[in-house]
Length: 413
Image (cartoon, rainbow, N blue to C red; front, side, top):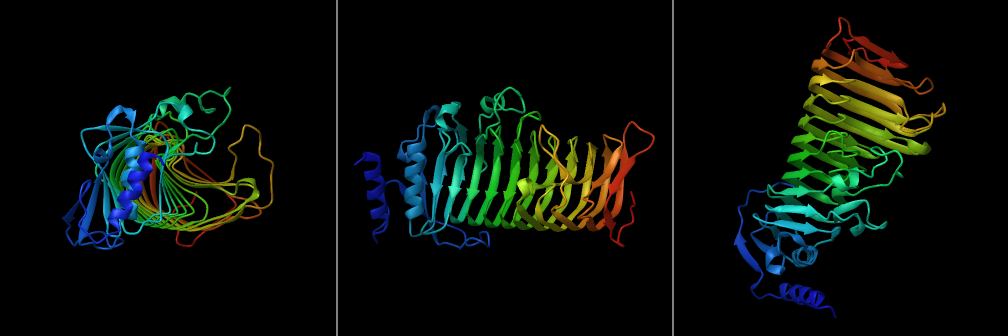
C-alpha cells in the first residue's frame, strides 16, 4: 500500500477514536458567533498543510499534502479547518476536494496558491477545473489569501486570441459543485485560465469580500459564474476581468448580488440561455447597488433563438455607470457564432424585468437596446428613473422592438 494512503487511513482511524487528538491537529475554542448557515461548534481541529509536507516554495507540487489534510478534516466527526498558512506559495496541479464530510469544514487560505504553468498537467478528463470542491455541505473557504491561475499560458492558445487555434475549454480556477450551506469570503483571485469562481448546482451560498482580477483582454475570464444554483447571495466584490463580471445561467433562481464593482469586463449578464434549442430558466434575481466602470456592456440578458424556458422576475436597481458601452441590453437573438444564426420561431420567454435608478454615462450613443422576439415578445418590462448620458454626442439613442412595457415605467425608448 502507498505510504501516503497508509498515513491518511491511520489518521482517519485515529480521529474516530475518543482519545484526544495529537500530532498534526490542535483543538482550540471558537467563538459562538459564526455564520448562521454553519453549525456553531465548540471546538475546531486544525490541519496545517505544512504539517503534512507542503513545502510552499512555489516550485514543488503540494497536492499530496493538501489532500492528506483534506481527507483528515473531511473525516473528522467534529468541525475542522484545513490551514494554508501565510508566507508561502503553494504550487498545485488540478485537485478535487470531495465530500460528503462528517462535519463542517473550513479551508482557511492565508498564503498564496499557484496553478501549474504546464498545460500538460491537465488532461481531457479534468480540463474544466483546477481547484474543485465537490459535494460538500457546511463548507467555508476564507482567509484573505490569494489564488493565482497562471492564465497567461492558456489565453495565448485561445481561439478568441488566435483564430487559427481550435476552441477548447480551459480550467476554472475555483469550482464549487453540489455544495450546500457554502460560504466563500475574503479571497483574491488572479489570472484564471477561464472563469475565476463557478458555483454549479449549489444551494444556500454566501459570497463576500472577493477581489478578482485579470487582463481586460483575457478571454472567457468571467469573475463569478452561477449555474443551476439557488439561494445565492453575493456582496462586496470587486471584479476586473476580460469577460462578464457576474454571469447567471440556466436553472438558477433566488440570486441576490449587492455592492458590486465591475470593470474592466463585459458587465453583468443573465445568459446566454437556450443554445441548441434547450430549455433553461432563470428567475428571482436582484442586482442592487453596482458600479460599472468602462465595461463593454452594462446589464444584459441574452438568449438564443430556438431556445425554450424563461427569464422572469429580474430586478436591476441603483446602478452607476461610467463610460459604459451598451448600458442596458436585452437580446433574444443572441448569436455567438462565426456563421449567421437562422431565424427560429421559439425563444426563451422574458418577462417581469425591472430597471430602476440608473445614473452615469454611456460611451456609446445607444443607451437602451431591447431586441426581443416577434413570436415571443418581452412582457412587463419596467424602465424607471433611467438617467444615463451619452458622451461625445449631442443626442443619445434608444432602440426597442417587440416589447410590452409595464405601466410602472417612466422612461420610454
